Amino acid sequence: MEKQIDLKRLPRHIAVIMDGNGRWAQRNGMNRLMGHQEGVVSVRKIVEAAVKIGLEYLTLYTFSTENWNRPKEEIDALMSLMITVIRRESAELIANNVRLRAIGDVGRLSQQAQAEIQACIDESSRNTGLTLSLAVSYSSRWEITEAVKAIASQVKEKTLNIDAITEETISEYLTTKDIPDPDLLIRTGGEYRISNFLMWQLSYAELYFTDTYWPDFREDNLYEAILDYQKRERRFGKTSEQMKNEISA
Image (cartoon, rainbow, N blue to C red; front, side, top):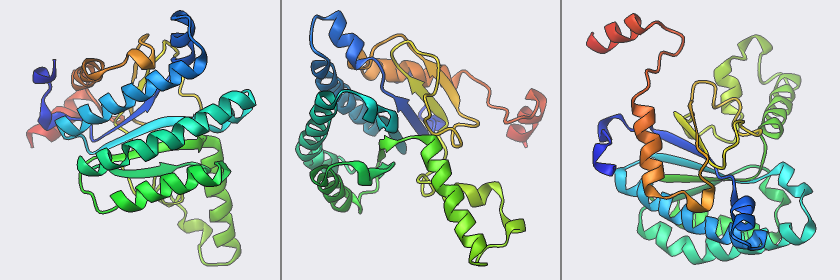
């Protein structure tokens, strides 16, 4: 399936809502943590596939602010798993020229989790290949609220004129200010919603939903999503004829 992909028409940025770990575990008679552990395997495989085809940006919805409402035992287990995985995978990411970023209210994580993430970010900062962003303790409403507060503070201090505020201004105050908006959103697990994820940035993204649970999502599933994306016509509010004229110009 990989050979069918037009590498000249790859989405520049793919965002993924990795859903279905718990249901996968339940279906297989396991506890939820086993589902998360198997989901880590999928993360590794998808990152490897993204590197292989030359994708520029990949953002994974790792832990939402709403996830803090889960049972403490599960949260503690997830935090421990995150620390272990980042520590274990850092060398491989760096060897594959992957640059790590984190978006979200990272300050809510444990000190150890913050330290492990920051260490990998620092060590991979000079890499020039795939930019892998982990959305941890993230929600779009939190992000937009923080952006509004920061902009309001600038206006109050008279360092920003309210009439000068544009869509680009707002984008500059988001946690994703240094990366392009996603071209393609993939959600696994059979749900059809974006769950408070990158709501501003996904305005013109193509949405792809699959019933496959995240622990079963592998390279061919990613390639299938990209092939589906490449069959679509992205008009950005224009007509098909306008788009054809622009391409031929």
